[in-house]
Image (cartoon, rainbow, N blue to C red; front, side, top):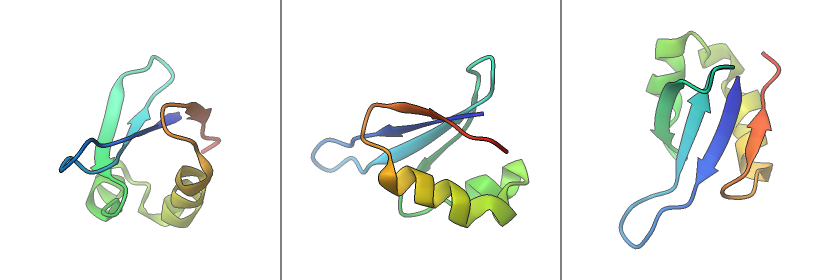
Length: 67
């Protein structure tokens, strides 16, 4: 699974994309509201790990999640 942090412009907030190994979009959520999207994927228990990685990740870069 991969995570991408996307910078918002003006009134559009910052977003996070979660993608599988084939790069299919699994989730797309605001940085400040990840709860429902991660719960739908069954990753609610990994919320702290994922959000810690997102906080450290520069905008526009892709990081691999080991889940």
